[in-house]
Image (cartoon, rainbow, N blue to C red; front, side, top):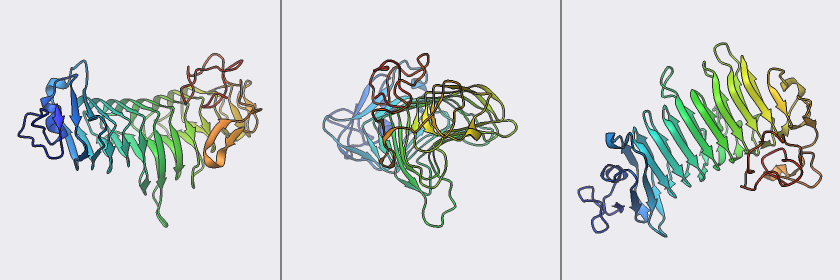
Length: 351
């Protein structure tokens, strides 16, 4: 199928008679087909549900024509299923709204994104930001009591520059999450985030089935924590929460009213002893300021240049060969196989 900024939705979406909108292309295409976009600007777009795609075994894939640059204004996915968007720029942000299922964004550049009561959404590569007085991204339910977002993967994304204006009272993160069951954030880099890099809040529900691994948490502007799980009120708590092999320049914090299956393994960051909690499993972390488990180390982080966000390890770093030999990602944040030495390194990068 073919789209062009000069096309018409009255046409058949062929190479000689391209359509204009992504919605038309999605509805005309069959599952597994490619919708190719000619270069240019398409303005705001919305993709609506199509019942024929709901049980499909493969996705409708939108991608630019070879060598083309494609720019959208904003994009709303409104209940569509089995859909993938590749290599696009979405200037005003994208939303995956309630009821949408099996949606993938691959190497998409956008100001922000919002995933709301959607399921099986993957964000792979690309970059998110900058944004002023708003989060770079939120994953959430549509309302209090609405269906949670479920099975969300964020992998290899660069989040940057979620900041506030002078005098603003906004609470701004690069990624804020609540009301979500099944979240994986891995191999992603965060830079110049106002309050936290990632903030996963309970908001009256347990935080459950969440994994953060191989992430790089750079400068936090005015907040205190890098990666924070905050489910410390009655009715909340943490179930099956894993933070593994993350590197951060600000402390990692996990706060749970009740705790089951909480693991902190192979991380490198500052930490105070007051954040150690005997209900959690602590294994082979390198904390600058604390030792929470018998295999943890209290040592300087050994980053190349924390001030500029280069959290690779220097020669002699305490994190080298200090990771958990029984629990580590198979590759580091840059795709290098682990381990490269006698044992896996703690943190996001192998030395």
